[in-house]
Length: 208
Image 1 (cartoon, rainbow, N blue to C red):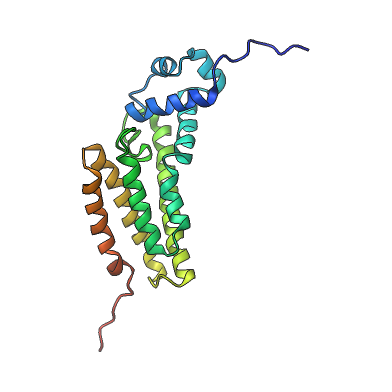
Image 2 (cartoon, rainbow, N blue to C red):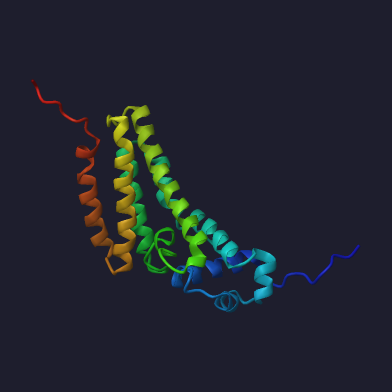
Protein backbone atom coordinates (compact mmCIF):
# COMPACT_ATOMS: atom_id res chain seq x y z
CA UNK A 1 0.00 0.00 0.00
CA UNK A 2 1.43 3.37 -1.02
CA UNK A 3 2.35 5.85 1.73
CA UNK A 4 -0.15 8.68 2.10
CA UNK A 5 0.87 12.27 1.50
CA UNK A 6 3.87 13.73 -0.27
CA UNK A 7 7.38 12.87 0.95
CA UNK A 8 9.39 15.53 2.74
CA UNK A 9 11.54 17.68 0.49
CA UNK A 10 13.81 18.91 3.29
CA UNK A 11 16.24 17.46 5.78
CA UNK A 12 14.78 17.79 9.31
CA UNK A 13 18.23 17.87 10.93
CA UNK A 14 19.36 20.73 8.70
CA UNK A 15 16.10 22.59 9.25
CA UNK A 16 16.44 22.20 13.03
CA UNK A 17 19.97 23.61 12.91
CA UNK A 18 18.67 26.58 10.92
CA UNK A 19 15.96 27.13 13.53
CA UNK A 20 18.59 27.00 16.26
CA UNK A 21 20.64 29.68 14.54
CA UNK A 22 17.62 31.96 14.24
CA UNK A 23 16.36 31.48 17.81
CA UNK A 24 19.93 32.05 19.04
CA UNK A 25 20.23 35.27 17.08
CA UNK A 26 16.82 36.75 17.92
CA UNK A 27 15.61 35.03 21.07
CA UNK A 28 12.28 33.25 21.45
CA UNK A 29 9.92 36.21 21.27
CA UNK A 30 11.93 37.95 18.57
CA UNK A 31 11.44 34.98 16.25
CA UNK A 32 8.13 34.55 14.42
CA UNK A 33 6.85 31.44 12.72
CA UNK A 34 7.18 33.23 9.38
CA UNK A 35 10.82 34.03 10.21
CA UNK A 36 11.40 30.38 10.96
CA UNK A 37 9.73 29.22 7.76
CA UNK A 38 11.93 31.56 5.75
CA UNK A 39 15.14 30.59 7.53
CA UNK A 40 14.38 26.88 7.35
CA UNK A 41 13.25 27.08 3.73
CA UNK A 42 9.98 25.28 4.38
CA UNK A 43 6.32 26.20 4.74
CA UNK A 44 4.78 26.89 8.14
CA UNK A 45 2.55 23.86 7.65
CA UNK A 46 5.66 21.68 7.28
CA UNK A 47 7.05 23.08 10.54
CA UNK A 48 3.86 22.06 12.34
CA UNK A 49 3.84 18.65 10.67
CA UNK A 50 7.48 17.84 11.45
CA UNK A 51 8.23 19.71 14.65
CA UNK A 52 4.93 20.83 16.17
CA UNK A 53 4.22 24.50 16.93
CA UNK A 54 6.75 27.20 17.75
CA UNK A 55 7.08 26.11 21.39
CA UNK A 56 7.61 22.48 20.43
CA UNK A 57 10.21 23.51 17.87
CA UNK A 58 11.99 25.64 20.46
CA UNK A 59 12.17 22.72 22.88
CA UNK A 60 13.72 20.57 20.16
CA UNK A 61 16.14 23.39 19.37
CA UNK A 62 17.20 23.59 23.02
CA UNK A 63 17.79 19.82 23.07
CA UNK A 64 20.08 20.25 20.05
CA UNK A 65 21.79 23.19 21.73
CA UNK A 66 22.37 21.09 24.83
CA UNK A 67 24.18 18.39 22.84
CA UNK A 68 26.29 20.85 20.85
CA UNK A 69 27.28 24.23 22.31
CA UNK A 70 25.97 23.33 25.75
CA UNK A 71 27.93 20.08 26.03
CA UNK A 72 31.56 21.26 26.67
CA UNK A 73 30.82 22.79 30.11
CA UNK A 74 28.95 19.66 31.20
CA UNK A 75 31.71 17.45 29.86
CA UNK A 76 34.24 19.45 31.87
CA UNK A 77 32.25 18.76 35.03
CA UNK A 78 32.16 15.04 34.27
CA UNK A 79 35.71 14.47 33.14
CA UNK A 80 37.97 16.59 35.34
CA UNK A 81 39.54 14.58 38.18
CA UNK A 82 38.76 16.94 41.09
CA UNK A 83 35.82 19.15 42.00
CA UNK A 84 37.94 22.30 41.82
CA UNK A 85 39.35 21.41 38.42
CA UNK A 86 35.85 20.54 37.20
CA UNK A 87 34.37 23.90 38.24
CA UNK A 88 37.31 25.80 36.78
CA UNK A 89 37.13 23.90 33.49
CA UNK A 90 33.35 24.37 33.35
CA UNK A 91 33.72 28.15 33.68
CA UNK A 92 36.43 28.29 31.05
CA UNK A 93 34.44 26.09 28.65
CA UNK A 94 31.44 28.38 29.16
CA UNK A 95 33.55 31.44 28.34
CA UNK A 96 34.88 29.72 25.22
CA UNK A 97 31.39 28.88 23.98
CA UNK A 98 29.83 32.31 24.57
CA UNK A 99 32.67 34.18 22.84
CA UNK A 100 32.90 31.92 19.80
CA UNK A 101 33.30 34.09 16.69
CA UNK A 102 30.68 32.19 14.68
CA UNK A 103 27.77 32.32 17.14
CA UNK A 104 25.91 34.97 19.18
CA UNK A 105 27.72 35.89 22.38
CA UNK A 106 25.40 34.52 25.01
CA UNK A 107 24.09 31.25 26.39
CA UNK A 108 20.60 30.42 25.10
CA UNK A 109 19.75 28.78 28.40
CA UNK A 110 20.22 32.14 30.13
CA UNK A 111 19.03 34.77 27.69
CA UNK A 112 16.85 33.19 24.98
CA UNK A 113 13.65 34.12 26.87
CA UNK A 114 14.37 35.91 30.17
CA UNK A 115 11.16 38.01 30.21
CA UNK A 116 8.22 38.59 27.91
CA UNK A 117 4.57 38.12 27.15
CA UNK A 118 2.32 36.19 29.51
CA UNK A 119 1.47 33.60 26.88
CA UNK A 120 5.14 32.58 26.74
CA UNK A 121 5.31 31.75 30.44
CA UNK A 122 5.62 28.04 29.64
CA UNK A 123 8.76 28.69 27.60
CA UNK A 124 10.35 30.71 30.39
CA UNK A 125 9.53 27.98 32.89
CA UNK A 126 10.99 25.39 30.54
CA UNK A 127 14.27 27.32 30.46
CA UNK A 128 14.13 27.88 34.22
CA UNK A 129 13.84 24.11 34.68
CA UNK A 130 16.91 23.62 32.49
CA UNK A 131 18.82 26.17 34.58
CA UNK A 132 17.74 24.37 37.76
CA UNK A 133 19.09 21.18 36.22
CA UNK A 134 22.38 23.01 35.66
CA UNK A 135 22.47 23.95 39.35
CA UNK A 136 21.77 20.36 40.35
CA UNK A 137 24.52 19.09 38.06
CA UNK A 138 27.06 21.43 39.65
CA UNK A 139 25.93 20.48 43.15
CA UNK A 140 26.18 16.78 42.31
CA UNK A 141 29.75 17.31 41.07
CA UNK A 142 30.65 18.98 44.35
CA UNK A 143 29.11 16.08 46.26
CA UNK A 144 31.18 13.70 44.17
CA UNK A 145 34.27 15.65 45.25
CA UNK A 146 33.41 14.96 48.89
CA UNK A 147 32.91 11.26 48.12
CA UNK A 148 36.21 11.12 46.23
CA UNK A 149 38.02 12.87 49.06
CA UNK A 150 39.30 15.89 47.12
CA UNK A 151 36.78 18.29 48.66
CA UNK A 152 36.36 18.77 52.38
CA UNK A 153 33.53 21.33 52.36
CA UNK A 154 30.69 20.75 54.84
CA UNK A 155 27.84 19.01 52.97
CA UNK A 156 25.44 21.70 54.18
CA UNK A 157 27.40 24.31 52.22
CA UNK A 158 27.17 22.58 48.84
CA UNK A 159 23.94 24.28 47.82
CA UNK A 160 25.35 27.76 48.43
CA UNK A 161 28.62 26.95 46.63
CA UNK A 162 26.73 25.48 43.67
CA UNK A 163 24.49 28.53 43.52
CA UNK A 164 27.53 30.81 43.61
CA UNK A 165 29.19 29.13 40.62
CA UNK A 166 25.88 28.85 38.77
CA UNK A 167 25.53 32.61 39.23
CA UNK A 168 29.03 33.07 37.79
CA UNK A 169 28.03 31.01 34.73
CA UNK A 170 24.93 33.13 34.22
CA UNK A 171 26.84 36.37 34.77
CA UNK A 172 29.46 35.39 32.20
CA UNK A 173 26.70 35.10 29.62
CA UNK A 174 25.36 38.56 30.39
CA UNK A 175 28.86 40.03 30.31
CA UNK A 176 29.54 38.41 26.94
CA UNK A 177 26.23 39.66 25.55
CA UNK A 178 27.23 43.17 26.63
CA UNK A 179 30.56 42.96 24.82
CA UNK A 180 33.07 41.47 27.27
CA UNK A 181 35.99 39.76 25.55
CA UNK A 182 37.30 36.28 26.26
CA UNK A 183 40.23 37.79 28.20
CA UNK A 184 37.85 39.87 30.29
CA UNK A 185 35.78 36.80 31.08
CA UNK A 186 38.95 34.96 32.06
CA UNK A 187 39.66 37.69 34.62
CA UNK A 188 36.20 37.09 36.12
CA UNK A 189 36.87 33.35 36.26
CA UNK A 190 40.18 33.97 38.02
CA UNK A 191 38.36 36.00 40.68
CA UNK A 192 35.68 33.33 41.05
CA UNK A 193 38.25 30.57 41.54
CA UNK A 194 40.17 32.71 44.02
CA UNK A 195 37.12 32.34 46.27
CA UNK A 196 37.24 28.52 46.13
CA UNK A 197 39.31 27.92 49.25
CA UNK A 198 37.18 30.26 51.34
CA UNK A 199 33.91 28.80 50.06
CA UNK A 200 34.94 25.19 50.56
CA UNK A 201 36.75 25.41 53.89
CA UNK A 202 35.10 24.23 57.07
CA UNK A 203 34.06 27.13 59.34
CA UNK A 204 36.51 27.78 62.14
CA UNK A 205 35.25 27.55 65.69
CA UNK A 206 36.61 30.04 68.22
CA UNK A 207 38.45 28.57 71.17
CA UNK A 208 36.52 29.18 74.39
